[in-house]
Image (cartoon, rainbow, N blue to C red; front, top):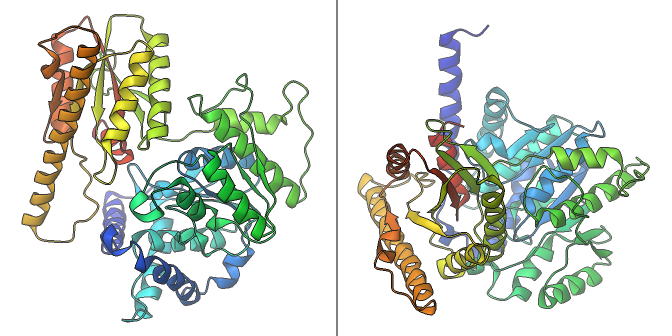
Length: 487
């Protein structure tokens, strides 16, 4: 049994690794446009420096890109394939609480001890060979390289690889020959990098296609589908479109949109198993093998359609967590939350929105969709609460600069509040009524802990009311809340 001294030393080593990892964070503006291609091609130098070229070429990989549903599709796929006795490696992003969530071996995040060993092995090798021409990799590039190191050394049977951003120049796209590729639903996100039309975005996502490698996607808008088909045709890729699974199938991830993600995972896994020579008979009831049914029903993804009672007041406050941050996923989130509200209202309840989105998002595309979708289904928020994220991913800089970022973030929250209040006034006007309390239906707090304190104080004062709190707009916000309530 480890002593307290050993545990302290282990924690210190892990924190040192995290500090070194944080030093690789760069401002996104450095990554946009002209640097994308250059940074991507540096990855081949990094693989060589880490002596991973041969090892990576031997990995059997399922590669998944898309705007929304990537994490869910990868999670379903991992759960299915683990059921076949395959040793799985899953790489996803972002993490919610701990960076080790991004690296899962057989469904379990990598241990601190292994993470630290693999981290320093990669970090020191790259540091030794870095130069002005070949600098240290950026944060996400390093994590992708670390994933390749972990999964190749651990000799996994399959790697399920989620694209971080885009596809063509994403760090994961350094792989040359995956077994099968998938493109989830496409929409408008990261437009400052990927383009302002669906055609441009689809072209970036289709960058993961490889000559002769089969690929699957879900029904897409015509503009996007046309580009995917063109890119697939040029590379002689057999691109197939899947339809949603039958809604009678039980899924471990909640929400109607998950039947489409699950269907894509089924297609990816079926092709993968066939390619490695594993055949399985379909179950007579719904056309899926038993191990597929089990994998889909047991899949679990933190921060997506997740219901968590408050740790201090579990009967009075229930958090509904969903890291939706695109217009389409916001609608799916609203539909899921509204459904949960209808199913779980056993005592008098009030719905509260706890929201933040990053400044690279357009809240005018998010908040109206969320509010309208909920209202259409009979759910109205008693209060909307806007807070900045607690997480500060770029600690580089002086204390005054960090404080300035916090001030800017609070200014952003007041902008969100104004947008929400305008939506509320617009609704009141169309309903031909004037509600003097509309202005009081939104609040801004300078920190998440203050907002949670307010929620708990309100719940204690209103003991007959249960608060159903939808936390959405940012996966970082969801992670911050989970960390705060120690779940």
